Length: 75
Image (tube, rainbow, N blue to C red; front, side):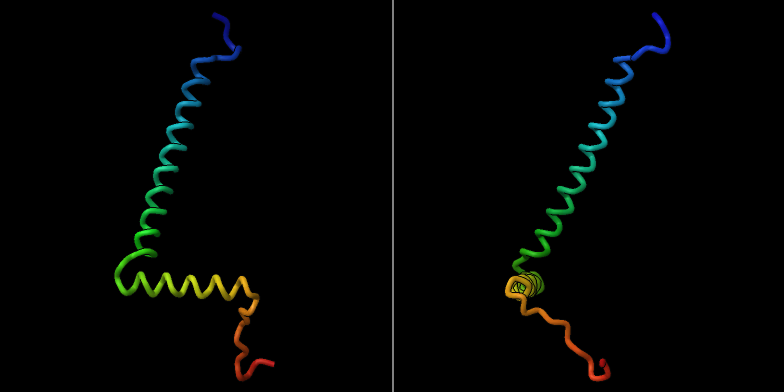
């Protein structure tokens, strides 16, 4: 066996390690989305209020009516 050439086994092991890392990241993101969905779509009063607030913000942004309030001392 010559040294310095491509090592398919080593490449396959490196690829396998990358795939496992990506799977772990995907599982973490899946968990984060599930937690956020549970908070946003909760049947508790706080979840309902958050959902309504998010809906109001989306509507304001779509209509282009969202303006930053001007303070009393602002020029």
